[in-house]
Structure formats: C-alpha cells, structure tokens
Length: 452
Image (tube, rainbow, N blue to C red; front, side, top):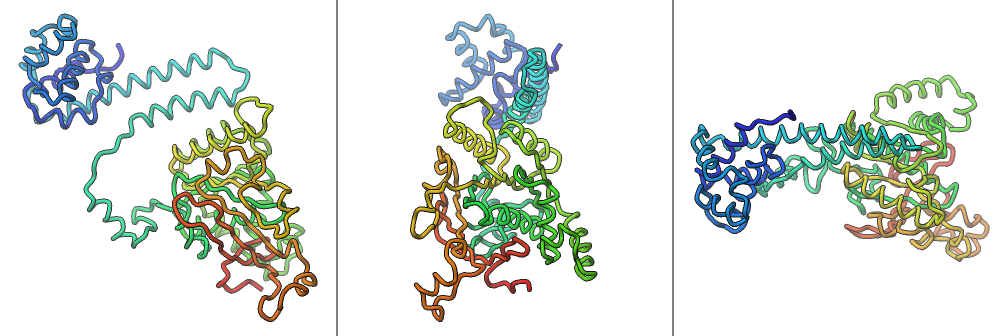
C-alpha cells in the first residue's frame, strides 16, 4: 500500500468538525488531493466548500453538503462523520495532523513521479539529454509544487533593511539578495543584478562582452564570498577563461601569460592569484555545443548541490533550442523564454551575452541600440535588462578624432568604454563609463587607479 495514515486524516476531519477555528490553520496547507482514503477526501472537499461560502462547518452542515452533492453514501454517511469526531484526541493539534497528511501525500507523489520517470526510460527516446531533462522536470515540478508562502508582518520584511542597510546588500546569513557587478556607475543605475532577472549584454565582436561578463562574475565572488557563479563558455575553453581571470588578478599581460614569458615577480603574483581564485565558488562549463535543456539540467544539479547565485552564458547565438526549428528567429525566441523561465525557477540573475548585427556599422555614430540585437525575436521582450558596450576608439582613429574635437576639452577616448543601459524593466536607463585595459582584457571603474 502507498504510504498513508488514515488515523491522521480522520483526526484532521474531526478537528474541523469540532473546532470552527481549525479550518483557518488547515486550509492553507492541506489540499483535498492530499487525502488517501476516498471518503475522507470527499468529506474534506465538503468542508472547503462550506468554508468558501463562509458557512459553519460541523457534522450537520458537512452531511448536508455531501447529500446535496449526492456523495453522502460514498463518503461513509453521517456515521463516518460521527466516527471521526469521536476518535479525534484534540483539535489543538490540527496543524500537526495536517502535516502528517501532507508529508505522506508527498511520498505518494514521489512514488508517482518515479513511475513517470520509469515510463520515460522505457520509451527509450533518441535524445538522452532531452530524456534526462524530462525526468528532472518531473522532480523539479514536484518540489516546486510544495513551496508555499504565507503572510508575514511588514516588520519582518523591514528587518532586512535594518540588518543590511537600505537599499539592500548581503544578509548576515550569507544569502546574497542581489549580485553587485563591482562597477559603481553600473550598480548605481541597476542597483546590482536582481534575482530572477534576464540580463542581456550586447556588443560587436572584440569589444569586450566576455571580458565584462567575466569581470562581473569575478567581482561577485570576490566581493560577496557566498555568491556562487555558473559560467557557460561556449566560445572559449576553460583554460582561456581562467587565463583571463589570472591575468587580471595578477596584473600581468595575458599574451605573455599564455606563452609563459613572465618575470620572477610576475610568476609570484600569478601564484598568489591562483591561490585566491581557487577558493572562489566559480564553476565553468566549456561545452562547445549546448542546448537549453542541457544547460537547465546542469544548472539545476549545481543549484541543488551548491546553491547558484548567478548564471552567465557566453553567448546566445551559439545556443541551440530544444526542438528542431528552421526559423532561427523563432528558435532564439524559444531560447530566451526558456532562459527567463530558468531565472524565475531558480530565482537567480541569468546574464546572457549576445552578438549585435552589422547594422550599427552603417550608422554614423556606431552606437548600439535595441534593434541591433541579432536574431532579435523576443530578446528585447523577454529581457529585464539590456546593456550594450560601446568603445569609440574601435571606430575612430586619434587623427580622425582630432579633426572633429577639441582635444583640450574632449580628449581621445582611449581605453574608455560606454556601458549603455538601453532597457531596464524596473528602473532607469542611462550610461556608465568604465576603463578598459587591453593588455589584460579587463574592465575597471573610472575612479579606480588603473593598473600600470
């Protein structure tokens, strides 16, 4: 027999029939489907019907409700209602009885989920990743279906502002409420990366999309040690990703680091950087080909094992949808919807890098705008934040700049990057300026002292 406790079910019903206040406790956490014995389920459904109509719940009214629905005999008749009243020890423990019923209902749901997963296995689908994704979805939905929230007093909500310092920050428990990018001007505009947000970073090739994403991820795990980052690098190998991180941390030229042409002092700094980075909760997946279903599965596993606080995907145009689709725009739309759903499911910011179309090359200013998102589809619609990287030095030489500008008032923007916040669903749009250093391929705050 599947796990169940008939006595606990009867104790719940008995509590409802003898105590009018018990329904306020039980109804918020117990569903009719949680009852295993059919007659108990019918009786509880009648209690909920009376409760929804603000009518009294007792033996007489429940019996009348069952009779009205033609279910009195099936529910054991009035005799069964008298039985549950006579056997309940006390209604004071109604909440405890209901917890027993819900716990055992969860165990039965788990058994049912195992059966569904077994059927998926017997189907022997041609795509193992899609099959594993279906199985994980069943378990994830089971867990998600049991999550419930209740009212909390405003004081409890406001306590976090007292503890963290308005307008937010890290909780004393180690939980990271928001992810700070580490770039003051960007954080001032965005308030950090908010949980459940889909963030798009767009730029033309060689402008610094990956560098900015790596810098944000690095700053997150360094400034907020409890923040865990999952980084999907489809364009670069994990060794190349780590090379960039070490280059910045040790302040050495990335090209010479790859070739191993370092001085003794630089080697010492690299060793120290390796020690620091090795202690951070930074996880890298460099699968060259990735589908959404695979990414979701990997992130969920890491989230269950470690607890993920931010996901970074480099980059969108290399991801494939879960279904075959000859229309790439529709496929990208499916991908962005799935990524947004993932951010909401796990309650983490998902940062996605995106290429921009060549259209901006034909404009005089070369400054990116939302319409430049390649294969845009629903990228703009699904994203909560869209930011672009623009470096004027990539499009104009110092000579050309000097012809059009007064160098005394407006010097050539060497190493200056404009971060354009083109969409911000929950806040202002605007621009922030950062410094970009070519030898380490890294971004820095404008006010920070730039490494030599």
